[in-house]
Image (cartoon, rainbow over all chains, first blue to last red; front, side, top):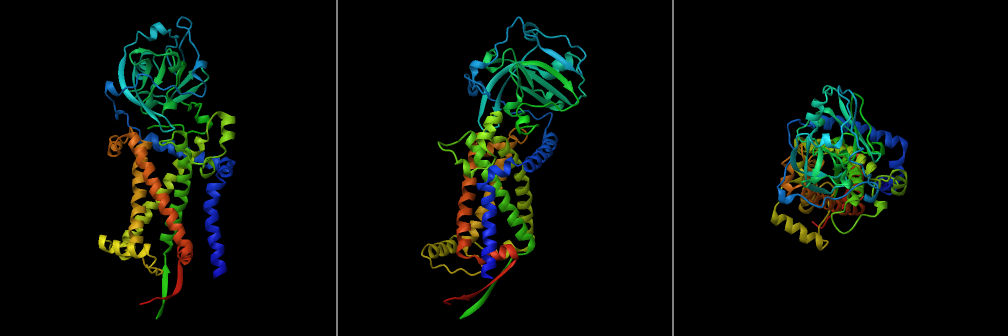
Length: 234
Length: 218
């Protein structure tokens, strides 16, 4: 009994130790990554079901909005692409009727709304900002996008790429943001515009958008390709 | 006088206990890695104690400090914990285990057992829970409930709004999540230390039954 007990106890200890101490080996194992990816896809479906088209992200007062908004990317801000206002074109692709490219000037004449919402980073920090721009839903309607399609994808000048589900694209707070704190979006924050989606984690808010496409195939995402959850709703 | 003490745990208790234990180890390990990406306080957890793969490799491969895998672990183990916790609670409420063995508790009896415990005069009887133990178990079970609730507020701050206001906002929910993680970690340290002192409790929780001959003073 004593021996057996000791053996069992050793087994119990090593189970905990296995998970904690050799965590690296377990996590990087192919079969573990596959299993985790499977649960992540299950979580996509759960999150899509939890998402409410009418539930608005909380809004905050002018005083709570941060003026000097935090810069965040995988490269230093001096490497942010400087897009020329005269040469820039927003191209449209996929299930969109009118694919005429958009200049900055034309984009900035679109009707704008303002929101003071919270950006929540997947790392855990959060920051409130004041954003102005045109709702993506009205832009999609204006350009004759097929709103029964499943996804909207984005390609960006810095090599970034993202995509969201159509219900989120049509959410009233999903903006093509042209301004931050009442001023034209600074280069480091994505001039000429960034997607502002307060119902998604920060990394689902692409900057320097150069292409918007509508599709039935789930678009890839820069961080999703690096193991993060695709839906990443909040 | 000596008497034979018996501790038994039905399969439902053992299974849910070990599933909760496994999920909590994964959640704490991956949670510490996620915490390290944006620390609340002026310290980070040593990388060897965290879960989420090789940090250097992830950084070199795709500029990610190993948070992707940590989050994948965290959002997988949360389902395991929620399910096993729910089953554990329902089973023990309806089987009468809570009523029989974890109650009653009260300030006077807690103080009596607590002062006896710190003077090493508290007798341990297999299969019986003193009031300090009972309070500790309720504390751990309550902490798990708080972890689930604050965790939901952090995971879905928009869809569950105004849940986060219970914790003083989104960052408040992160703080509450950290505080009850600490409580559960302390519980585990004491729990495991006491199991090492009385290994038969481990036998009972694993095989279902353990006996001991008690030579009490009374």
